[in-house]
Length: 486
Image (cartoon, rainbow, N blue to C red; front, top):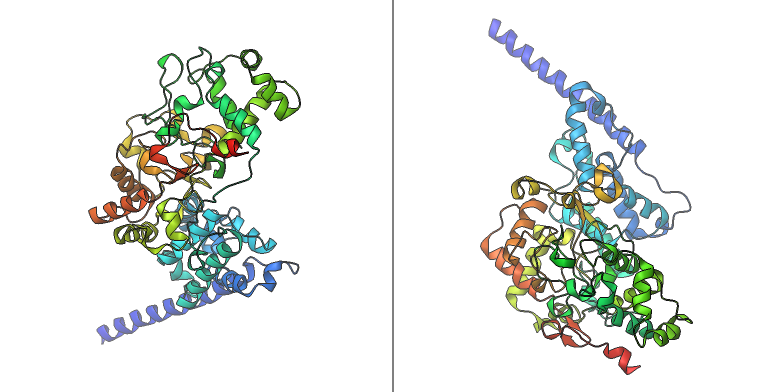
């Protein structure tokens, strides 16, 4: 009799728990729908059926709870014990991805960035969102196959409409990587002046260094050193990013402190560890005294006024010419199916499946976003006994905690030539770089030797040409062929 009573009591408690859970879930579903992001009546998205189905899926999931700041969260986020757990989830969610720009893009009828689209595609393909713990209280937020397909269709549609290269094959218009354009708009007279300045050692304090000292055109646009070597042999704190395809970057330097190429060109000239000049008037005087510059500056700027602004403007124009189209992978994307091997194709598919393409996307295969180094693993704890200011990433520039250890995603064009790799130059081989990125930036921490081999093979297909010359054969003082033709 007593056992029967206990059994009934337990059953009653279970039933009560189920009813309570069901009531809570019903309440939360109503709360989720009521507070979901909305589109204004004037939003162009309302007239775009592909975008509307994707937006409806995002409304159902409520990505904004964990991936935006100051969201109106469900009640249980505020309970004492749950709050401690949820705060960590919120911190990690916002660290991994900021969803507010996606909502804004839908509301304004504009495309998200290339990288934002690739990050969304990554987690949907891997079926990583929403997490299981969240679905316990929000079962309606489970993305079914149709919803996932709707989101992926929208991603590809956005790429095809806004980011596809003009010469890409039709089947690849929605692909995460696009061919580098054959040409971009350049003022060739200004670029010719900029080339002369790029190679001019009078910009340095001791007359022994120029821009090409660190950005060798014959070395993939870098110096192939762990960190830069500057004036009087001083060693800098950070690895040299490639100058090739830098025109496609969202910002310049690893921490993005320079908004464009001209601002970047100004930095090393005055840096005491790099080119070591002390003031721009002195640099201008040295440049002005060299034969031929007066006529060049007059032809480009209407006067022989040599200043920080004219010097860096000209160098920036020259650096715009340093694009490297016509890699074997570009040819593949343009429709030449046999331009890459079966192994290289497998490598590309693994590159996408593992999640590398979540950050490395677009024409430069990177360079268009800032991301945390160590997003999925303790990079700095594992690889450094002592951190330096260079390891702070964008924090050193913005002083925002959310930018600590956040760096510009390096572009992967010509990556086989640009080692050592990472901001600290810690990866000495491309194989090691691939393993480390999988370990610290993706959930797939320990990839196979075959995956590494295949991905490296794919990466080597990204080596292009400069001015029609294979990059491995470009001389250190490569001329401006297009300028000479004009």
